[in-house]
Length: 573
Image (cartoon, rainbow, N blue to C red; front, side, top):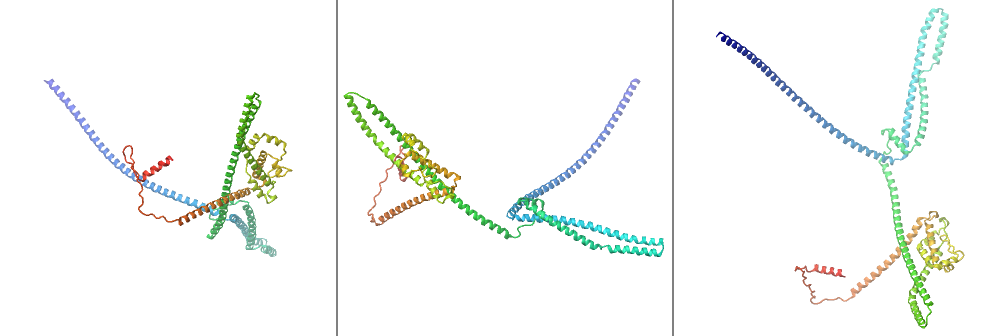
């Protein structure tokens, strides 16, 4: 029992100890919990305070940011306004510069030289006067210092003399020395010039020297400025001198008006001259083009005619060759009577065929004679109107000669080659004749008259001479060394175009007058004709029958069907 009680008491003590320990732990935990609660509360308070402070700081920073943004906006607006003002000022500056350049362009150039000379002379005179003033002040100070030294020496000399008198004693010596000293002082005072006179003399000397230097500087500046050009003078004025120092040339509005009036008068004169020249050039160009077109058409016609002639001549020569061959074949045949009869019949057939083919040959001969006659006429015209080439200063008849030379009809080199190839007889006879071709307008064949030359020449030779002369004329006219002006050629072309227009105008007026007379006659006949009076009921026009299509649809009747029928009639016509 006791052991059990002791065990139970021990257990109770043990349990009480454990309970105490548990209470201690509980108290410790409660204390810890209280401390943690206090810490947590303190933390919450601190965090709330920090949060409030952060909110306040954020508000302050946001306000500051807003203020900065407002300031930035204000500054950006000010910058934009300043940039706009700068652009406006730049535009105004450019306009002012353009206006200044324009005013400088209409200003007299001598004015720039005078302004630059005056500015440089003023600068040089200022420098010279400044140097003279500095020299005057320096030398005046030297004179003042010398005068002060002389006065100080004079004042210091009197007490020294008085002390020497006392030391030496002796009235006679003192008197004698006093007299000497007084004499020396009086001499110094007599030799000394007043300071005002010295300064006046110095001022006059420096002023004369400055004027002399100014004259030399003005002469050298004038020489330097005169050696520059107007652009250089303007550049120097713009770079080296401010605009405030440069005066204005235009002080009154009448000056600009006078300049504009003079320029306008000169421009009107130039405009009138240019318009007249343009009209003249247009007229001359049109005349030249018309004449060129006419000449080209004439050349084409001549080429076509000569080609057709060449083809006809070839055909005729071929026919002649065939006939000659057939005749030779028939003559070589030697047969009996039957053969003779056949030969006779063949000869009759040949004669008949010869007669049938002689007709186109005769027509070709007639055409050939007509061509030869036209060529001889052209050759005579050229030889009669040909003149020797002279310079414009050799005479005043060059215009008529040029007109006669220009009026000749140009021929191509193709005609010469074709005619030379188709006429071997002309080649043989050409070798036997001595034909001297002269320079353009040289007078034809030497030693013979125009009639003899044309009678002793073949048409091919005439054509060659005509072509060479025309080529020489053209080369002579186009060569600038011969002194033939284009105005003369244009005047000839203008005269020919004027004559052609006059002829066309006369023909047109005649045609208009005849048409007018015919109209007047018809009107007179209508007026004199009896009046036709219609009596009774007018006859009704026959109506068109209805037209049905294939599908049974009705076609529109009336003016539309009439138009369609008219169109069909025109199509089949």
